[in-house]
Length: 465
Image (tube, rainbow, N blue to C red; front, top):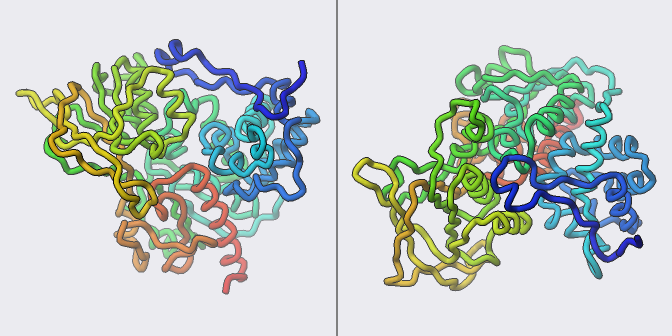
């Protein structure tokens, strides 16, 4: 059958009614023929705008042409030059606002499914036993990387490829950062995808030490002054949840999205053979409209709840990916838009019994460019629920800056670092990802890790100014 060059090759997915009851992956990905058909839609532009839209600058037309010609190992090699986590990025990157958003094919038709093709190549490489290679000579210099999330793993992998002796320090008992504790199994399988990608970083020679809390177990100053490290990269993320400060937030049954997702993802609360305690709410309200809110809502649904998402703006202002909102609606999530919580209601035992919200309307744009939500007086009403999940964003944990001499932070408690190199106010210390920007995307964190690896290499090679 002829390919419609103006439209993407559809990707297979689990039926919404079926997937709403399990934690298996929603998107099933392309098979070989589908991948080659989709790759044939690429125009192989001489001036590829898609590469400009990629925070880690993957040679997108290059790898897609290799897929088209069934040279999948070569495609994997091209991607691995720029990305340490292709199977992850192919699943969770916001391609629609980055590479695919810049795709020339998308001007008159649908953009090429770059993310789905990256996922196909990464999955093929994993299933075929293809491992990344290191050819650079050893440099006899040690670099410590704090945090094993996407930023830390990317920085560590790039430095290892350059020949550095790299050790990653992870506070939790498992490597992967937000990839293992934050993103649900149905979007990002841990055993199938995350662990093999972490193992690929280890295969480059990177050592990963878990259960090490920098600021308590040891400090950055000690790493540099006593433990022989020549540079340190801080990629510790932003795991400190925010709350609204409304009455009733202390009630039993109120979670931050971080805690709720960590219990489910890292501690396997969704599995009957694990003893992780969690309230499986029958009526759940998730407050917020970002990707994390969608993850929390869809997880609560799979645990057996009727789930409402309460967001103070309209659907057009939802910050979550369009695909995630679409999947949530398909699965039966109820969206209560232009509404904002004012109080969490408790029963006599201290448990949540409901949430009081007020209706909103959109006024003039605020500093973010989105129209500011304004309360409608006298429009308050109650939503009955037994669980409330607050998904209002996160900020960096202040532990590292507070235990490091001379490390500057800004008013949001984020580490101040140069965007191009990752350098901070402290010599030899670099930082990037959510620890610098506040909560953002996996791929932006990876881009910061790549930039910092280059900055560290220039610093340790005596090339920095």
